[in-house]
Length: 338
Image 1 (cartoon, rainbow, N blue to C red):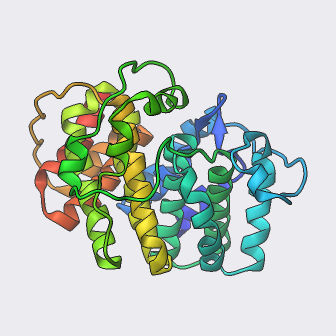
Image 2: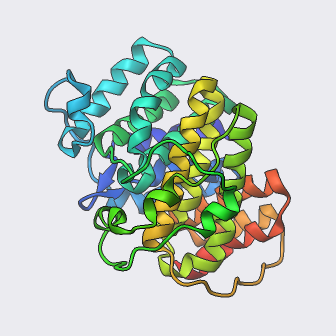
């Protein structure tokens, strides 16, 4: 990976806020990490030249975070949260900070339409694979700060208690009747669906770390295949049914084993909720376009939309883990739909 390009991109992006135009998520740090990761570094700065025009400035803080529980989920404290994690990551090792805050933030995995956890997953991947550095630690801090400011639980989510495997659990996810409005309005309707409480707990809990990793890998894989059938319902939002569990899976190696089972439960709740509130009636899956993983990602990079790039990045991981060529078609399908 070209560290220089990624660090330069981070420096440009860290002058901007985690949201723009109200509460749209800043996808820049996630997209550029994926582009550089897959050999598309030469595209990054031109892509940023266009993307930066739509972003807002970094928000200023109001006061220090003293009662963190009261400040969770308060977007007016976004600047305070960013400053808080900047200080924490200057004072303590990043794994220690992550280990403290992951269980606090995890119940609010719906934050920013799951972009909080997704951005953390990209930041952690860099730190695990490529080492630390000032810009990389700043990125982790901004990702954690965004998650904290937009912290939002999935209604009815909790520990997994069911007997179902991933395919059966996904097949049983009910749909809300009124699929209108933004994600916050849609999530609020879940508790009125009689089948939801059973569906969100239906997945069989992992018995240990190895099974937790296996379940998450299968969840990403199956959610990618489901995008081929349901993605037309909302091509952008259903990307997150794949990318949210991918982010959790990428973060597991940096976490204590005791955190892996609750991480699976939270990832499942995110995928199930997004599926419930956005998935349309199934359509025949599209044909796989020619080419392997490199060609798929190249097409996503040329398309340029951040969601297409991030979905391609996720399904390449799923393909590497499973060898299933079908999942690669999800990225091309997103490119056609978005």
